[in-house]
Image (cartoon, rainbow, N blue to C red; front, side, top):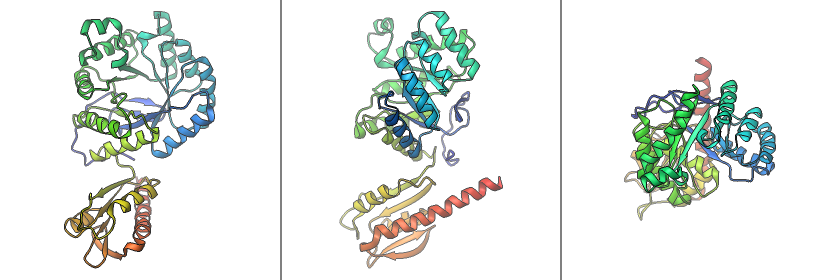
Length: 372
């Protein structure tokens, strides 16, 4: 789905690059991506995970290609999936050359780490010829030794200096088709680094808090760090790094963007935390609806409120809203009173009405596309 024009955020202007058929930067929607954690040489498992990520809404998927053996697997993977693929490559320029021949959509490789100048030129020339962008990825955990000695520890300035070493190499080779990331597991360092580089280059910025942690802790750190940067207008594509199922990275990524009205995909739930005023089990109802309705991709608001204090106000603002009542639960659709629901069939009835509303909204979107 496209970016939400209602967002008050003024995004940083950046050059646009194409990762396959997905535009990154410029006025394109902020792309959401993840990375496989299967063994790349296990083609079946990797393909299955990529398809699961694509179903969850991934715009781009990154795959590690650590060996020439893995390039053979990558060739088979590329044939079986549609989503744009980024190859994660370190040090070996031959692997980079090989995957570009196999149809990779973007390289994640730092040119300063490839080796001799002639090897760097071979990779860049091939990327030029095939119009394949490169992502420079700087990580606080793998800074150059001399920068570690210079700064004493990873800092935002060290990340930026490292990034410019790689950028300068591409500049000298007249290659501007690249994007940049500067990631740390520490929120303040990451935010500071992106803010420092945002005004110095025109290329797109790939955002992430690297090694953020498990599902809960990593989600919070990513939401805080990426949220700060996105509010600044910084960021053209994001990856939420979680020690969890990669599908969760996509879900959390979209939730972050939806909260800032930068992307609209699927249901935006508004739900109360519940209290003794509730007339039905709000938490179980919310959890059940969220699970059942994950397949809906059309953007819509659904409110699930337990009582008549805040319920009617929230429900009237949603596409479909449920509020507890004195005698029965009331549903509002497009702000107007609709059915009254009993607790016994509450979830089933809500699912039915939400799906009906989603189908109508999908048809409206399709009609607008046809007319335009």
